[in-house]
Amino acid sequence: MRCRPSTMSSTSLNILLFTVLCLLVRSNSQTVHKRFEYKYSFKPPYLAQKDGSVPFWEYGGNAIASGESVRLAPSLRSQKGAIWTRTPINFDWWEVDVMFKVTGRGRIGADGLAFWYTTARGEYTGEVFGSSDRWNGLGVIFDSFDNDNKHNNPYVMAVVNDGTKNFDHKSDGATQLLSGCLRDFRNKPFPTRARVEYFLNTLTVHFHNGLTNNEADYELCFRAENVVLPRGGYFGLSAATGGLADDHDVIHLLTTSLHTTQQAGSGQQISSADQQKLSQEYQEYQKKLEQQKEDYRKEHPDEVRDKEGEFDDWFESDGQRELRQIFQGLGQIQDVMRDLHKKVDEVIGKQSNSLSLLSAVYSHAQGQGLQAAPGQPAQMPALPISRQDWDLMSSNHQLVINTIAELKGFIIDVARKSDALLQGGGAGAAGAPSPQLLSEMRDGINVVKQTVAGVSQRLSAPPPAAQALCPSVSCVSAATLLALLGAHLGLMFLYAVYKYRKKGSSSEEILLSDVCVHLILRADIAPVRAAKLLLRLFDDVSEN
Ligand SMILES: [Ca+2]
Ligand SMILES: [Ca+2]
Image 1 (cartoon, helix red, strand yellow):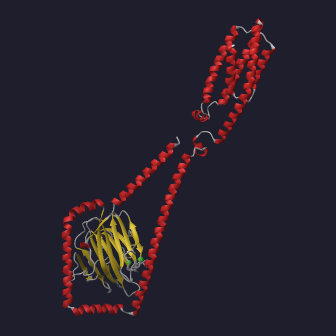
Image 2 (image 1 turned 90 degrees about the vertical axis):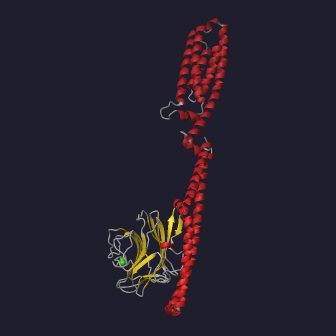
Image 3 (image 1 turned 90 degrees about the horizontal axis):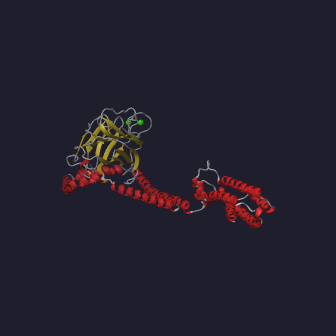
Protein backbone atom coordinates (compact mmCIF):
# COMPACT_ATOMS: atom_id res chain seq x y z
CA MET A 1 0.00 0.00 0.00
CA ARG A 2 2.75 2.39 0.98
CA CYS A 3 4.76 1.79 -2.18
CA ARG A 4 2.04 2.62 -4.63
CA PRO A 5 1.79 6.42 -4.23
CA SER A 6 5.55 6.87 -4.64
CA THR A 7 5.63 4.77 -7.80
CA MET A 8 2.64 6.71 -9.03
CA SER A 9 4.32 10.05 -8.34
CA SER A 10 7.52 8.97 -10.09
CA THR A 11 5.45 7.84 -13.07
CA SER A 12 3.66 11.18 -13.21
CA LEU A 13 7.03 12.96 -12.94
CA ASN A 14 8.32 10.93 -15.88
CA ILE A 15 5.23 11.81 -17.89
CA LEU A 16 5.73 15.48 -17.06
CA LEU A 17 9.38 15.37 -18.14
CA PHE A 18 8.43 13.61 -21.33
CA THR A 19 5.78 16.23 -22.09
CA VAL A 20 8.25 19.05 -21.49
CA LEU A 21 10.77 17.36 -23.78
CA CYS A 22 8.13 16.88 -26.43
CA LEU A 23 7.17 20.55 -26.19
CA LEU A 24 10.80 21.61 -26.43
CA VAL A 25 11.39 19.42 -29.47
CA ARG A 26 8.19 20.73 -31.01
CA SER A 27 9.03 24.38 -30.36
CA ASN A 28 12.47 23.79 -31.87
CA SER A 29 10.96 22.17 -34.91
CA GLN A 30 8.66 25.17 -35.39
CA THR A 31 11.51 27.61 -35.93
CA VAL A 32 10.69 30.32 -38.38
CA HIS A 33 12.76 30.33 -41.53
CA LYS A 34 13.48 33.77 -42.93
CA ARG A 35 14.47 34.64 -46.44
CA PHE A 36 15.46 38.06 -47.59
CA GLU A 37 13.32 39.12 -50.56
CA TYR A 38 15.46 41.52 -52.57
CA LYS A 39 12.75 41.95 -55.21
CA TYR A 40 10.54 43.53 -52.58
CA SER A 41 13.25 45.64 -50.96
CA PHE A 42 15.33 48.72 -51.54
CA LYS A 43 18.25 50.11 -49.63
CA PRO A 44 21.22 52.44 -50.05
CA PRO A 45 23.74 52.75 -51.48
CA TYR A 46 22.62 52.98 -55.10
CA LEU A 47 19.01 52.81 -54.09
CA ALA A 48 18.07 54.45 -57.36
CA GLN A 49 19.84 53.82 -60.63
CA LYS A 50 21.36 56.47 -62.85
CA ASP A 51 18.06 57.04 -64.63
CA GLY A 52 16.37 57.52 -61.29
CA SER A 53 14.48 54.25 -61.34
CA VAL A 54 14.39 51.97 -58.33
CA PRO A 55 14.81 48.32 -59.36
CA PHE A 56 11.61 46.28 -58.81
CA TRP A 57 9.78 49.39 -57.63
CA GLU A 58 7.71 52.18 -59.20
CA TYR A 59 7.21 55.59 -57.75
CA GLY A 60 5.23 58.67 -58.67
CA GLY A 61 3.64 61.90 -57.57
CA ASN A 62 6.13 64.21 -55.90
CA ALA A 63 8.35 61.34 -54.85
CA ILE A 64 12.04 61.53 -55.77
CA ALA A 65 14.49 58.68 -55.46
CA SER A 66 18.19 59.20 -54.92
CA GLY A 67 21.03 56.84 -54.23
CA GLU A 68 20.54 57.20 -50.51
CA SER A 69 16.81 57.47 -49.99
CA VAL A 70 13.39 57.96 -51.48
CA ARG A 71 11.88 61.33 -50.66
CA LEU A 72 8.18 60.52 -50.80
CA ALA A 73 7.02 64.06 -50.04
CA PRO A 74 9.30 67.09 -49.71
CA SER A 75 8.81 69.86 -47.16
CA LEU A 76 6.59 71.95 -49.38
CA ARG A 77 2.86 72.57 -49.11
CA SER A 78 0.42 69.93 -50.38
CA GLN A 79 2.88 67.41 -51.69
CA LYS A 80 2.05 63.75 -52.28
CA GLY A 81 4.06 60.83 -53.44
CA ALA A 82 4.29 57.05 -53.24
CA ILE A 83 6.39 54.06 -54.19
CA TRP A 84 5.03 50.57 -54.92
CA THR A 85 6.39 47.13 -55.71
CA ARG A 86 6.00 46.14 -59.35
CA THR A 87 4.80 42.63 -58.63
CA PRO A 88 2.57 41.22 -55.94
CA ILE A 89 4.26 39.13 -53.27
CA ASN A 90 4.31 35.34 -53.58
CA PHE A 91 4.56 34.38 -49.90
CA ASP A 92 2.03 34.39 -47.09
CA TRP A 93 3.96 35.67 -44.10
CA TRP A 94 6.48 38.46 -44.03
CA GLU A 95 8.43 41.00 -42.06
CA VAL A 96 9.11 44.47 -43.43
CA ASP A 97 11.63 46.83 -41.91
CA VAL A 98 11.17 50.46 -42.93
CA MET A 99 13.80 53.02 -42.02
CA PHE A 100 12.63 56.58 -42.48
CA LYS A 101 13.11 60.17 -41.44
CA VAL A 102 10.39 62.73 -40.98
CA THR A 103 12.05 66.09 -40.51
CA GLY A 104 10.83 69.66 -40.56
CA ARG A 105 11.62 73.06 -39.17
CA GLY A 106 8.27 73.43 -37.50
CA ARG A 107 7.45 72.29 -33.99
CA ILE A 108 4.46 70.60 -35.62
CA GLY A 109 4.61 68.77 -38.93
CA ALA A 110 2.22 67.28 -41.43
CA ASP A 111 0.73 65.07 -42.69
CA GLY A 112 2.59 61.85 -42.32
CA LEU A 113 3.80 58.69 -43.93
CA ALA A 114 2.22 55.28 -44.48
CA PHE A 115 3.30 51.74 -45.23
CA TRP A 116 0.85 49.68 -47.27
CA TYR A 117 0.09 46.09 -48.01
CA THR A 118 -2.89 46.09 -50.37
CA THR A 119 -4.40 43.92 -53.08
CA ALA A 120 -3.86 46.67 -55.65
CA ARG A 121 -1.29 49.44 -55.93
CA GLY A 122 -2.64 52.76 -54.75
CA GLU A 123 -2.56 56.12 -56.45
CA TYR A 124 0.52 58.33 -56.24
CA THR A 125 -1.49 61.37 -55.21
CA GLY A 126 -4.27 59.84 -53.14
CA GLU A 127 -6.27 61.20 -50.24
CA VAL A 128 -4.82 59.07 -47.46
CA PHE A 129 -1.23 60.12 -46.82
CA GLY A 130 -0.62 60.22 -50.54
CA SER A 131 -2.29 56.90 -51.36
CA SER A 132 -5.79 55.76 -52.29
CA ASP A 133 -8.68 55.69 -49.91
CA ARG A 134 -10.86 52.54 -49.67
CA TRP A 135 -7.84 50.29 -49.85
CA ASN A 136 -8.11 46.55 -49.43
CA GLY A 137 -5.51 45.38 -46.97
CA LEU A 138 -3.32 46.94 -44.33
CA GLY A 139 -2.06 50.45 -43.77
CA VAL A 140 0.49 51.23 -41.06
CA ILE A 141 0.19 54.99 -40.73
CA PHE A 142 2.61 57.41 -39.12
CA ASP A 143 0.29 60.34 -38.57
CA SER A 144 2.15 63.54 -37.73
CA PHE A 145 -0.65 66.05 -37.63
CA ASP A 146 -3.24 66.17 -34.85
CA ASN A 147 -6.48 66.72 -36.79
CA ASP A 148 -8.84 66.04 -33.89
CA ASN A 149 -6.78 68.21 -31.52
CA LYS A 150 -6.58 65.56 -28.81
CA HIS A 151 -2.85 66.08 -28.39
CA ASN A 152 -2.20 62.48 -29.36
CA ASN A 153 0.01 62.88 -32.38
CA PRO A 154 2.44 61.90 -33.80
CA TYR A 155 0.81 58.50 -33.65
CA VAL A 156 1.61 55.08 -35.14
CA MET A 157 -1.42 52.96 -36.06
CA ALA A 158 -2.54 50.02 -38.15
CA VAL A 159 -5.78 50.28 -40.10
CA VAL A 160 -7.19 47.26 -41.89
CA ASN A 161 -9.68 48.04 -44.63
CA ASP A 162 -11.69 45.73 -46.85
CA GLY A 163 -11.99 48.28 -49.63
CA THR A 164 -15.27 49.78 -48.44
CA LYS A 165 -14.33 52.28 -45.73
CA ASN A 166 -13.14 55.84 -46.13
CA PHE A 167 -10.38 56.89 -43.80
CA ASP A 168 -11.65 59.32 -41.19
CA HIS A 169 -9.06 62.10 -41.19
CA LYS A 170 -11.10 64.27 -38.80
CA SER A 171 -10.64 61.82 -35.95
CA ASP A 172 -7.16 60.73 -37.10
CA GLY A 173 -8.69 57.28 -37.73
CA ALA A 174 -9.36 56.81 -34.02
CA THR A 175 -12.51 54.77 -34.65
CA GLN A 176 -11.04 52.67 -37.44
CA LEU A 177 -7.63 51.66 -36.21
CA LEU A 178 -6.82 48.09 -35.33
CA SER A 179 -4.22 49.14 -32.80
CA GLY A 180 -1.55 51.75 -32.34
CA CYS A 181 0.91 53.51 -30.09
CA LEU A 182 1.86 57.10 -29.35
CA ARG A 183 5.41 57.61 -30.66
CA ASP A 184 7.21 60.71 -31.79
CA PHE A 185 9.02 59.96 -35.00
CA ARG A 186 9.78 63.53 -36.13
CA ASN A 187 13.20 65.18 -36.05
CA LYS A 188 15.19 62.38 -34.50
CA PRO A 189 19.01 62.34 -34.54
CA PHE A 190 19.01 58.96 -36.25
CA PRO A 191 16.51 57.51 -38.67
CA THR A 192 13.40 56.04 -37.09
CA ARG A 193 12.41 52.51 -37.98
CA ALA A 194 9.34 50.37 -37.97
CA ARG A 195 9.33 46.60 -38.21
CA VAL A 196 5.99 45.26 -39.38
CA GLU A 197 5.62 41.51 -39.01
CA TYR A 198 2.70 39.49 -40.31
CA PHE A 199 3.08 35.85 -39.33
CA LEU A 200 0.37 33.24 -38.83
CA ASN A 201 -2.32 35.94 -38.79
CA THR A 202 -0.60 37.90 -36.04
CA LEU A 203 0.40 41.46 -36.87
CA THR A 204 3.22 42.89 -34.80
CA VAL A 205 4.69 46.37 -35.12
CA HIS A 206 7.97 47.23 -33.45
CA PHE A 207 9.24 50.79 -33.43
CA HIS A 208 12.73 52.20 -33.20
CA ASN A 209 12.64 55.76 -31.90
CA GLY A 210 15.79 56.94 -33.67
CA LEU A 211 17.49 58.20 -30.51
CA THR A 212 20.31 55.77 -31.15
CA ASN A 213 21.80 54.06 -34.12
CA ASN A 214 21.56 50.69 -32.43
CA GLU A 215 19.92 47.84 -34.28
CA ALA A 216 18.64 46.30 -31.05
CA ASP A 217 16.61 49.26 -29.84
CA TYR A 218 13.26 48.24 -31.25
CA GLU A 219 10.37 48.29 -28.84
CA LEU A 220 6.94 46.81 -29.22
CA CYS A 221 4.31 49.21 -30.50
CA PHE A 222 1.47 46.71 -30.65
CA ARG A 223 0.58 43.13 -31.42
CA ALA A 224 -2.77 42.15 -32.92
CA GLU A 225 -3.97 38.59 -33.36
CA ASN A 226 -6.42 37.06 -35.83
CA VAL A 227 -5.59 39.59 -38.52
CA VAL A 228 -6.63 38.29 -41.92
CA LEU A 229 -5.03 40.06 -44.86
CA PRO A 230 -5.65 39.20 -48.50
CA ARG A 231 -2.99 37.09 -50.22
CA GLY A 232 -0.72 38.29 -52.97
CA GLY A 233 -0.78 42.01 -52.21
CA TYR A 234 1.64 44.82 -53.07
CA PHE A 235 3.92 46.65 -50.69
CA GLY A 236 3.93 50.40 -50.87
CA LEU A 237 4.97 53.57 -49.10
CA SER A 238 3.38 56.97 -49.41
CA ALA A 239 3.48 60.37 -47.77
CA ALA A 240 1.74 63.70 -47.94
CA THR A 241 2.14 67.23 -46.66
CA GLY A 242 -0.55 69.83 -46.00
CA GLY A 243 -0.40 73.42 -44.83
CA LEU A 244 2.52 72.37 -42.69
CA ALA A 245 5.20 70.34 -44.34
CA ASP A 246 7.90 67.84 -43.41
CA ASP A 247 10.41 66.02 -45.50
CA HIS A 248 9.40 62.36 -45.68
CA ASP A 249 12.43 60.27 -46.54
CA VAL A 250 12.57 56.50 -46.63
CA ILE A 251 16.09 55.16 -46.34
CA HIS A 252 15.32 51.50 -46.76
CA LEU A 253 12.57 48.98 -46.96
CA LEU A 254 13.74 45.42 -46.34
CA THR A 255 11.34 42.55 -46.86
CA THR A 256 11.89 39.13 -45.37
CA SER A 257 9.53 36.27 -46.10
CA LEU A 258 8.74 34.05 -43.13
CA HIS A 259 8.22 30.33 -43.46
CA THR A 260 7.30 27.57 -41.08
CA THR A 261 9.48 24.45 -41.26
CA GLN A 262 7.17 22.56 -43.61
CA GLN A 263 6.96 25.51 -45.99
CA ALA A 264 10.71 26.04 -45.85
CA GLY A 265 11.39 22.37 -46.62
CA SER A 266 9.26 22.41 -49.76
CA GLY A 267 10.53 25.85 -50.75
CA GLN A 268 14.19 24.87 -50.47
CA GLN A 269 13.75 21.93 -52.83
CA ILE A 270 12.51 24.23 -55.53
CA SER A 271 15.00 27.01 -54.90
CA SER A 272 18.18 24.94 -54.63
CA ALA A 273 18.66 25.06 -58.39
CA ASP A 274 17.23 28.54 -58.66
CA GLN A 275 19.24 29.99 -55.85
CA GLN A 276 22.58 29.91 -57.60
CA LYS A 277 21.16 31.58 -60.64
CA LEU A 278 19.56 34.33 -58.58
CA SER A 279 22.66 35.09 -56.55
CA GLN A 280 24.66 35.26 -59.77
CA GLU A 281 22.09 37.68 -61.15
CA TYR A 282 22.36 39.80 -58.04
CA GLN A 283 26.14 39.95 -58.17
CA GLU A 284 26.04 40.99 -61.81
CA TYR A 285 23.57 43.69 -60.93
CA GLN A 286 25.81 44.97 -58.14
CA LYS A 287 28.80 45.07 -60.51
CA LYS A 288 26.79 47.02 -63.04
CA LEU A 289 25.81 49.57 -60.42
CA GLU A 290 29.38 49.94 -59.30
CA GLN A 291 30.49 50.53 -62.88
CA GLN A 292 27.76 53.09 -63.43
CA LYS A 293 28.73 54.97 -60.32
CA GLU A 294 32.36 55.07 -61.36
CA ASP A 295 31.38 56.40 -64.78
CA TYR A 296 29.19 59.05 -63.21
CA ARG A 297 32.00 60.22 -60.96
CA LYS A 298 34.38 60.49 -63.92
CA GLU A 299 31.82 62.42 -65.96
CA HIS A 300 30.71 64.84 -63.22
CA PRO A 301 33.56 65.33 -60.73
CA ASP A 302 32.37 68.84 -59.71
CA GLU A 303 28.80 67.88 -59.06
CA VAL A 304 29.74 65.21 -56.59
CA ARG A 305 32.00 67.59 -54.75
CA ASP A 306 29.34 70.29 -54.68
CA LYS A 307 26.80 67.95 -53.24
CA GLU A 308 29.15 66.81 -50.54
CA GLY A 309 29.94 70.47 -49.81
CA GLU A 310 26.26 71.23 -49.40
CA PHE A 311 25.91 68.44 -46.89
CA ASP A 312 28.97 69.63 -45.04
CA ASP A 313 27.54 73.14 -44.75
CA TRP A 314 24.30 71.75 -43.50
CA PHE A 315 25.78 69.58 -40.81
CA GLU A 316 28.79 71.58 -39.70
CA SER A 317 26.99 74.24 -37.64
CA ASP A 318 28.08 74.33 -34.01
CA GLY A 319 24.58 73.76 -32.69
CA GLN A 320 24.15 70.69 -34.83
CA ARG A 321 27.48 69.27 -33.77
CA GLU A 322 26.75 69.89 -30.11
CA LEU A 323 23.38 68.32 -30.50
CA ARG A 324 24.87 65.29 -32.21
CA GLN A 325 27.42 64.93 -29.42
CA ILE A 326 24.66 65.10 -26.85
CA PHE A 327 22.71 62.47 -28.70
CA GLN A 328 25.77 60.29 -29.03
CA GLY A 329 26.36 60.59 -25.29
CA LEU A 330 22.75 59.75 -24.67
CA GLY A 331 23.06 56.82 -27.04
CA GLN A 332 25.99 55.47 -25.09
CA ILE A 333 24.12 55.88 -21.83
CA GLN A 334 21.22 54.03 -23.37
CA ASP A 335 23.55 51.24 -24.52
CA VAL A 336 24.80 50.82 -20.98
CA MET A 337 21.27 50.92 -19.64
CA ARG A 338 20.18 48.29 -22.12
CA ASP A 339 23.05 46.03 -21.13
CA LEU A 340 22.10 46.47 -17.50
CA HIS A 341 18.52 45.76 -18.35
CA LYS A 342 19.51 42.57 -20.12
CA LYS A 343 21.57 41.46 -17.18
CA VAL A 344 18.76 42.20 -14.74
CA ASP A 345 16.44 40.21 -16.99
CA GLU A 346 18.91 37.34 -16.95
CA VAL A 347 19.14 37.45 -13.18
CA ILE A 348 15.38 37.55 -12.84
CA GLY A 349 15.07 34.67 -15.29
CA LYS A 350 17.58 32.58 -13.38
CA GLN A 351 15.92 33.42 -10.11
CA SER A 352 12.50 32.42 -11.30
CA ASN A 353 13.98 29.23 -12.75
CA SER A 354 15.57 28.26 -9.48
CA LEU A 355 12.42 29.23 -7.59
CA SER A 356 10.29 26.99 -9.75
CA LEU A 357 12.83 24.18 -9.36
CA LEU A 358 12.80 24.64 -5.61
CA SER A 359 9.05 24.61 -5.42
CA ALA A 360 8.95 21.50 -7.62
CA VAL A 361 11.47 19.75 -5.34
CA TYR A 362 9.58 20.90 -2.25
CA SER A 363 6.21 19.68 -3.47
CA HIS A 364 7.74 16.38 -4.58
CA ALA A 365 9.43 15.92 -1.18
CA GLN A 366 6.20 16.75 0.60
CA GLY A 367 4.33 14.19 -1.47
CA GLN A 368 6.92 11.53 -0.68
CA GLY A 369 6.95 12.49 2.99
CA LEU A 370 3.27 11.71 3.19
CA GLN A 371 3.78 8.36 1.59
CA ALA A 372 7.05 7.38 3.25
CA ALA A 373 6.17 8.13 6.88
CA PRO A 374 4.17 5.21 8.22
CA GLY A 375 3.15 7.40 11.15
CA GLN A 376 -0.45 8.13 11.92
CA PRO A 377 -0.59 11.79 10.74
CA ALA A 378 -0.27 10.74 7.10
CA GLN A 379 -2.47 7.66 7.22
CA MET A 380 -5.03 8.69 9.78
CA PRO A 381 -7.32 10.45 7.31
CA ALA A 382 -7.70 7.24 5.30
CA LEU A 383 -9.05 5.26 8.31
CA PRO A 384 -12.50 5.53 9.83
CA ILE A 385 -11.08 5.91 13.35
CA SER A 386 -9.13 8.76 14.84
CA ARG A 387 -6.00 8.54 16.91
CA GLN A 388 -7.94 9.21 20.09
CA ASP A 389 -10.21 6.25 19.36
CA TRP A 390 -7.15 4.13 18.71
CA ASP A 391 -5.63 5.07 22.09
CA LEU A 392 -8.92 4.46 23.87
CA MET A 393 -9.14 1.07 22.24
CA SER A 394 -5.64 0.02 23.28
CA SER A 395 -6.24 1.13 26.88
CA ASN A 396 -9.51 -0.83 26.89
CA HIS A 397 -7.60 -3.85 25.67
CA GLN A 398 -5.18 -3.51 28.53
CA LEU A 399 -8.07 -3.28 30.97
CA VAL A 400 -9.63 -6.38 29.45
CA ILE A 401 -6.39 -8.34 29.81
CA ASN A 402 -6.06 -7.36 33.47
CA THR A 403 -9.66 -8.30 34.21
CA ILE A 404 -9.23 -11.63 32.45
CA ALA A 405 -6.17 -12.43 34.57
CA GLU A 406 -8.26 -11.72 37.61
CA LEU A 407 -11.07 -13.83 36.26
CA LYS A 408 -8.73 -16.69 35.53
CA GLY A 409 -7.88 -16.92 39.21
CA PHE A 410 -11.55 -17.09 40.10
CA ILE A 411 -12.28 -19.76 37.55
CA ILE A 412 -9.39 -21.97 38.56
CA ASP A 413 -10.71 -21.73 42.06
CA VAL A 414 -14.20 -22.62 40.90
CA ALA A 415 -12.87 -25.57 38.87
CA ARG A 416 -11.00 -26.93 41.82
CA LYS A 417 -14.07 -26.63 44.03
CA SER A 418 -16.38 -28.26 41.48
CA ASP A 419 -13.89 -31.13 41.08
CA ALA A 420 -13.96 -31.65 44.79
CA LEU A 421 -17.75 -31.48 44.75
CA LEU A 422 -18.03 -34.05 41.98
CA GLN A 423 -15.68 -36.40 43.74
CA GLY A 424 -17.69 -35.95 46.91
CA GLY A 425 -20.95 -36.58 44.96
CA GLY A 426 -19.48 -39.77 43.48
CA ALA A 427 -18.89 -41.08 47.01
CA GLY A 428 -22.46 -40.21 48.20
CA ALA A 429 -25.07 -41.62 45.67
CA ALA A 430 -27.86 -39.29 46.79
CA GLY A 431 -25.99 -36.07 45.79
CA ALA A 432 -24.73 -37.32 42.40
CA PRO A 433 -26.15 -35.58 39.32
CA SER A 434 -28.10 -37.89 37.00
CA PRO A 435 -26.48 -38.77 33.54
CA GLN A 436 -29.47 -37.13 31.81
CA LEU A 437 -28.74 -33.79 33.44
CA LEU A 438 -25.10 -34.07 32.52
CA SER A 439 -25.84 -34.75 28.85
CA GLU A 440 -28.28 -31.79 28.79
CA MET A 441 -25.61 -29.59 30.27
CA ARG A 442 -23.07 -30.85 27.74
CA ASP A 443 -25.40 -30.07 24.83
CA GLY A 444 -26.09 -26.59 26.15
CA ILE A 445 -22.44 -25.95 26.73
CA ASN A 446 -21.58 -27.15 23.21
CA VAL A 447 -24.00 -24.64 21.73
CA VAL A 448 -22.46 -21.85 23.79
CA LYS A 449 -18.98 -23.10 22.87
CA GLN A 450 -19.76 -22.85 19.15
CA THR A 451 -21.22 -19.38 19.48
CA VAL A 452 -18.30 -18.14 21.55
CA ALA A 453 -15.79 -19.69 19.14
CA GLY A 454 -17.43 -17.86 16.25
CA VAL A 455 -17.41 -14.58 18.12
CA SER A 456 -13.81 -14.97 19.21
CA GLN A 457 -12.83 -15.74 15.61
CA ARG A 458 -14.45 -12.53 14.47
CA LEU A 459 -12.93 -10.53 17.27
CA SER A 460 -9.46 -11.90 16.58
CA ALA A 461 -9.49 -9.99 13.25
CA PRO A 462 -7.59 -6.64 13.46
CA PRO A 463 -9.76 -3.82 14.80
CA PRO A 464 -9.19 -1.35 11.86
CA ALA A 465 -10.23 -3.98 9.34
CA ALA A 466 -13.29 -4.82 11.43
CA GLN A 467 -14.07 -1.12 11.58
CA ALA A 468 -13.61 -0.72 7.90
CA LEU A 469 -15.86 -3.70 7.09
CA CYS A 470 -18.93 -2.50 8.88
CA PRO A 471 -20.49 0.88 8.40
CA SER A 472 -19.93 2.84 11.58
CA VAL A 473 -23.53 3.94 12.03
CA SER A 474 -25.67 0.82 11.76
CA CYS A 475 -23.35 -1.90 13.18
CA VAL A 476 -23.92 -3.55 16.55
CA SER A 477 -20.73 -2.88 18.46
CA ALA A 478 -18.57 -5.75 19.67
CA ALA A 479 -19.13 -4.76 23.29
CA THR A 480 -22.92 -4.96 22.94
CA LEU A 481 -22.69 -8.36 21.25
CA LEU A 482 -20.40 -9.70 23.90
CA ALA A 483 -22.58 -8.34 26.67
CA LEU A 484 -25.54 -10.15 25.15
CA LEU A 485 -23.49 -13.33 24.80
CA GLY A 486 -22.35 -13.00 28.41
CA ALA A 487 -25.93 -12.60 29.54
CA HIS A 488 -26.93 -15.64 27.51
CA LEU A 489 -24.08 -17.66 28.96
CA GLY A 490 -24.96 -16.51 32.42
CA LEU A 491 -28.59 -17.53 32.02
CA MET A 492 -27.51 -20.94 30.69
CA PHE A 493 -25.22 -21.42 33.59
CA LEU A 494 -27.81 -20.21 36.10
CA TYR A 495 -30.30 -22.61 34.62
CA ALA A 496 -27.81 -25.45 34.92
CA VAL A 497 -27.05 -24.51 38.47
CA TYR A 498 -30.74 -24.24 39.27
CA LYS A 499 -31.39 -27.73 37.84
CA TYR A 500 -28.41 -29.08 39.65
CA ARG A 501 -29.62 -27.56 42.93
CA LYS A 502 -33.06 -29.04 42.46
CA LYS A 503 -31.54 -32.51 42.45
CA GLY A 504 -29.66 -31.94 45.64
CA SER A 505 -27.92 -28.98 47.14
CA SER A 506 -24.95 -28.61 49.38
CA SER A 507 -22.73 -25.73 50.50
CA GLU A 508 -20.26 -26.33 47.61
CA GLU A 509 -23.03 -26.03 45.02
CA ILE A 510 -24.18 -22.73 46.47
CA LEU A 511 -20.63 -21.50 46.34
CA LEU A 512 -20.27 -22.46 42.67
CA SER A 513 -23.46 -20.71 41.63
CA ASP A 514 -22.60 -17.59 43.63
CA VAL A 515 -19.23 -17.37 42.00
CA CYS A 516 -20.78 -17.66 38.57
CA VAL A 517 -23.34 -14.97 39.29
CA HIS A 518 -20.57 -12.81 40.59
CA LEU A 519 -18.60 -13.40 37.43
CA ILE A 520 -21.44 -12.58 35.13
CA LEU A 521 -22.60 -9.50 36.97
CA ARG A 522 -19.19 -7.92 37.13
CA ALA A 523 -19.27 -4.87 34.96
CA ASP A 524 -15.68 -4.83 33.85
CA ILE A 525 -15.40 -8.45 32.71
CA ALA A 526 -13.76 -8.66 29.35
CA PRO A 527 -16.32 -10.69 27.51
CA VAL A 528 -14.14 -12.59 25.07
CA ARG A 529 -11.59 -14.01 27.38
CA ALA A 530 -14.20 -14.59 30.05
CA ALA A 531 -16.28 -16.56 27.60
CA LYS A 532 -13.24 -18.57 26.51
CA LEU A 533 -12.31 -19.39 30.09
CA LEU A 534 -15.86 -20.27 30.97
CA LEU A 535 -15.90 -22.49 27.92
CA ARG A 536 -12.82 -24.31 29.11
CA LEU A 537 -14.35 -24.66 32.55
CA PHE A 538 -17.51 -26.14 31.07
CA ASP A 539 -15.41 -28.53 29.04
CA ASP A 540 -13.74 -29.72 32.19
CA VAL A 541 -17.06 -29.96 34.01
CA SER A 542 -18.78 -31.84 31.20
CA GLU A 543 -15.88 -34.26 30.79
CA ASN A 544 -16.12 -35.04 34.45
CA1 LIG B 1 -3.76 63.27 -38.72
CA1 LIG C 1 -5.15 63.19 -33.00
